[in-house]
Amino acid sequence: MRLLLSACALTLVSACSQHPAQTQSQSVDSVIEFNEPRFRQDIQNLSSDKFEGRAPTTQGETLTLDYLSKAFAAAGLEGANGGSYLQAVPMVSYTASEDQQISLGGMTFNYRKDIVLGSRHDNRQINITNAPLVFVGYGINAPEYDWNDYQGIDMVGKIAVILVNDPGFALPNSGKFNGKTMTYYGRWTYKFEEASRQGALGAIIIHDTEPAAYPWSVVENSWTGPQQDLVVDKASQDSRVQVEGWISKEKASELFDKAGLSLATLSDRAASSPLNVALETTADIAFSNKAEYANSYNVVATLPGDEASDEHLLFTAHWDHLGTDPNKTGDQIYNGALDNASGTAGIIEIARQFAAQAKNGSPLKRSITFVATTGEEQGLLGSRYYAENPIYPLEKTVAVFNFDSTNIYGRTSDYIIVGKGKSELETYLTNAASSQQRVTVRENHPESGGFFRSDHFSFAKYGVPAVFAGGGNKPVDEASAKYKADMKQKMKGCYHNVCDEYRADWDLSGALQDMGVYYQAAQTLANSDDWPGYYQGTEFHHLRPAKTVQP
Image (cartoon, rainbow, N blue to C red):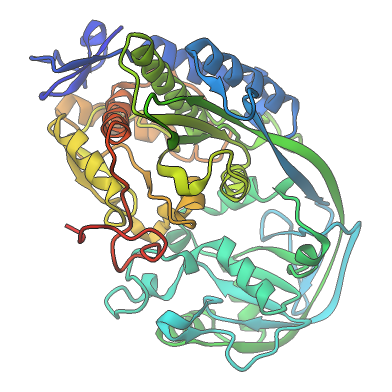
């Protein structure tokens, strides 16, 4: 099965009648050997029950590493780590007991239903008594925005209670932060990091579905059971909050009411100006905790360039998912078919095509490296580790193209670039999309902070231009629109849930279309001398400045 790249569209020739979204291309500029059945089979295999949800440091990981290593080897790529396809990522798995004694303000809480707590400390027992609770608004200390929710308060021995997202979400027209577009200050990772820097004993985020961009079920499924992290030295571990987690908005409102305060009123105030308010009540928290150390692995494969082989373009996709939950009744496996067996299958298929191109006498000038990362679901762990310990120097890394869930909803006439407007790298995507007669657009819900939620962000923090793109809002025709609506309904609620399973009725033509954009963009950049940079006004401009102004 062959994918034709033309000025008309990207289509699968022998499958044009299989799905409503697919039509015959009219003219051919070049041929891309994307093999839809093979791509589909990779998704199905990686998300099968045999792989046990692909949790790091499990048998599911062992099977996944073997599968990916063999796939890259068969394609003809080299193991990037001294001939090995594996890069060890030292990890520690923290497991908090589900039998937790939690009292906030004299109220009791049901673990999972009302609150989820854990600890990233190598302590067998967490015991916190009479710890004062302090509402710290959004928990942000951002000098560039003249904002400090911790101003004038000593957090040592106290537990911070924090709103999700940032003030721009609540007041998008106020000029605060970046309006509806979430900044990194709105991410949960930042909030725990800042509470730790402030010397807090603990940090609890108030979950609210709209500003969080996901329901409570995601917290319950993602934050219970073993929680992986990178191994750090004792001083770094000791500087962290002892307990961190989430509380439901409903239960938080009850807690504030009992303290004689209004969560709604304080939330309004917190969006207008920096705020911290003592709840004049305390917390008692006790649970057992276990820390287990083991290496997980990134899979890294390289196709050397023929002229500038020391300069690399990276393709990333995380192979991991949530594993299994023996406490669930019925289906216990989080197969992670869309998130992210589909993205991992995508970089394998792109690797095959680039390797075939080189074998047929058309090697790229620069090298292309594929990094299937571990631990993304636990906080971008594998990509963070690679960025901190790169196999190839970051100053020689030209760009990063990241896949995190591919488009299973059919072909579109537009193409979404998450966080659009950050770097010159996006120009390559825009040009590639235009060859498919598509226009590039930003995501519909920038308030969800998508740019900070996937592996490309680990590289952006070091100034490497990185993109996360795919899918679109506008189906190419009425039949595609109907298919998309039907499949959206079938997949509703499956993000980080056991129903994220492979479906034979997925129309993958949209995924192949998007893969064509990445492929063409990477091919063009790899055969050039260009070094894209970040536009002025973005948070990464000072690290690798753009040569041009933002269009």
